[in-house]
Length: 320
Image 1 (cartoon, rainbow, N blue to C red):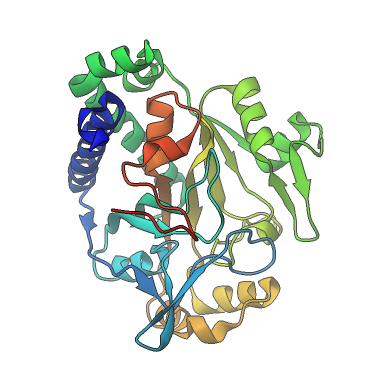
Image 2 (image 1 turned 60 degrees about the horizontal axis):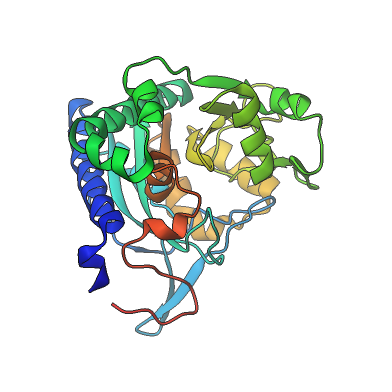
């Protein structure tokens, strides 16, 4: 019962309430509707071949092996065929890796998919973050000031003074001088380390989009840039590092099947997905934001594990 009298967790509950309400209002204003989706899936979106680094969470449900969803992006793509402007959800996601100061095993995921391209999705992500900051300042400025002593980071976003900078991965790698502590090179492509993300934030600005990553390092479902080696994707870095992941998808089944072959992904588990692309080709894009990472930035905190009211760690029995 210590939670009931803890000012930190009381503030966290209020921030969660604001974020949930403002998320619904923002997407309603964009003509984008919410959908109710199950937490289980037979078509995980990660890992998906080559450079994937996340671990799926498999479970046995009445004798049937299935997965706890790491993302419902595939299902949101399906919903875009029913709701032409797009669809979103706010629900838990599950990862098999252990937690650390910036990563949770179970986290709240604010995810959207729209009928549109990468630039449109990035613009919506910026607008969404700005609206959240405005609402938090409007309702919890006094409490946040008491907790952390400053509102300047929120105010700079809410009043439009802050610039969302953008660099390609090639430009970022050059800026970071390809140093191994910043750039992780694999057989499939290059990736940013957490230290690399933070160095870009330090040198470029508090909000940085890193676009056009090596296609081998991102999931197969990200569309290919016309240059033939980069993906049409973008990660927004702020606070602890990557907080928003954004991408454009393949339009049709032939593009998906080609990407699966390159990434070494068995198409059998994704037959429904390729059939959907064949029957109803559509250009969609979307983004996912880790809610706890966003709130970690709001509260200028250095350990994401303090952003869960009820912690969850894989391999540990926790109550309630």
